[in-house]
Image (cartoon, rainbow, N blue to C red; front, side, top):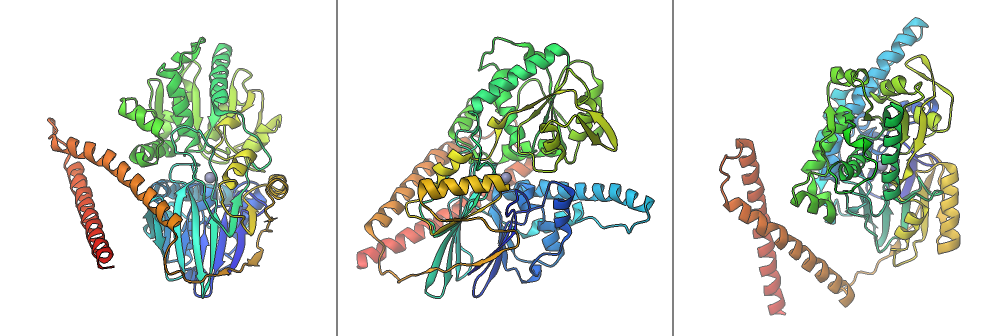
Length: 554
Ligand SMILES: [Zn+2]
């Protein structure tokens, strides 16, 4: 089997790995390169494979650096299925067209410059329309289901706890009598973060392709940073400035809303209450839509968040929260007097409305800019974070006088201890860990840590490098071991318990007819879901009857 590392190798963006077996070719991720102009240009290079020959694709999560070249892939002839979780498919349905729109806008800007200097005009990488066309290839799967894609490849998506719908992908790849268990980490989440369940540990792998974004960092505890954010808001309000938070539309923004909700809805009492009258603007249409998608995928939430919802508090809403969608509302924000918190995208300040808010606030001594997410090399965000005294925004030189903060406690990536904790979950010693998705320093440091502390061989592939890996001969087993059988039964019992605890209350709720009546669409959706449930439960019953008959026969 051959793996080619065609993106996010010694880099953090552009994730793209090609796997070739005897009879099939597939991709893991197809992300956008983001950062400096040189890195951005990589998006325009032709793929190192023929998209028409790719059988299918696996996608770990919706972030653009993992999914952003899918429309280009489809535009150039890919016709296979794109397997991912349902929440990932939902998020991509807004994020990819948004990315297409950004590509179009950037091309308009660039072409104006090109025209003036007499250079050849260029086409956008893809348009919003082309991005929409790629959505029909998405094939959502459920977490923890083991799915056979073809005779050779079986996959399972387990929770990565990084963003809504994010997954670690387990792959069983057969070639003749040989089998390889490959685990792709996707982006590994942090434990004990709000809203989402923690990442799952995987038990076995022959080879692991693993991210290393924060492989050389240790994060602050997230509660400390939530408190620190409240202090920053209070201090900035005293100075009469605004608090601008560049944030990824997905997850970081919702995490901040969740943390602020705790203070604003007063179940955490803070001594200094200046922030209570400060409005919080979510100024990003994408963030508004993403927040709606969160509310549609509660099955990804952790126990604590589900409890809040049951108690009647929507953790993604509080009284001072204002969502702005259209441009007029957005422009109003900087014109209305008084201090405010402005959360806007993009997270690395490379596009979107955040650039306007930075232009309005960077030069003001009294304002604060708070970074809560990763800033890739070469981005506007990275330059401000690293202390540049003046930056160019929309062709204008802007002084950086505002206070600059960086709260990495909101990070959605595991730090070096988190990565080690995840690797400690493997019960066997993997043959090799390929370290990707990290800047050089981070990859080197985590590689050294794994080698010395865990005694597992590692390898840091170059961008474009291909490697051949061999599987072990598998001797077909007659029967599964007692241990394996027990593990299955424990998981079945666990699923049954969960089913009982959700199904009975749902059925009871259904029996009560709603007084003010439900909408037609809602009723149709309820009926469709019930039909599917009925079908699934009949099939489950048939399977159990057949099994019982066989056992009695034996
Ligand atoms: Zn990510």
